[in-house]
Image 1 (cartoon, rainbow, N blue to C red):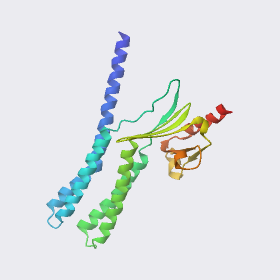
Image 2: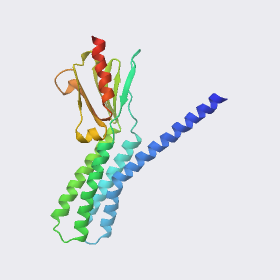
Image 3: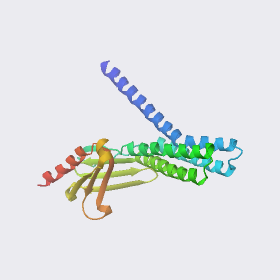
Image 4: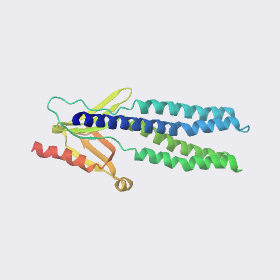
Length: 233
């Protein structure tokens, strides 16, 4: 009886967490595409604003929202396939802080562009430049957010694995016995936010290197991989 109650509690918790995660992803998709769709609709209602520009802005918002919604819902975090006897030591996913930071940074530029365009007599080139800068930061953040939904970094007792799975599966692996160097990369902002990158190399060249980028608390991962050298000794 007690086991059945505990099992029901675990099931309800997992069910609730699934719906919360899905709600967050859908809400993020609305945030990504919603502002552009609203601006496009307002543009159609403004007589002095070109209809073609309103259509472009609305189409960008609709496309970004649709792609974001699809990628968010299908963003099942990939897990590595382990061979018999292989033990999973660490699994991490890229943090969303850099992506969200870029989205936040784009807001002042977009608001300033809207203000100059609507309520000032400044030449159109000024709001246009601000809009392009804001749009660049916004898209950089949005694409990074959507990409990170499909990336997994794993360390087993035999290899280091980078997995990306969305429309295709891309796997990069380095066997533990072939690792020749490990390094950590953390700039000032990454240090104060508790994140960074771990670079694992088995030789010279992009194909011989795995970069675990934008992960929270990277030091334990680096120490786990350094333990391979002691095993080899």
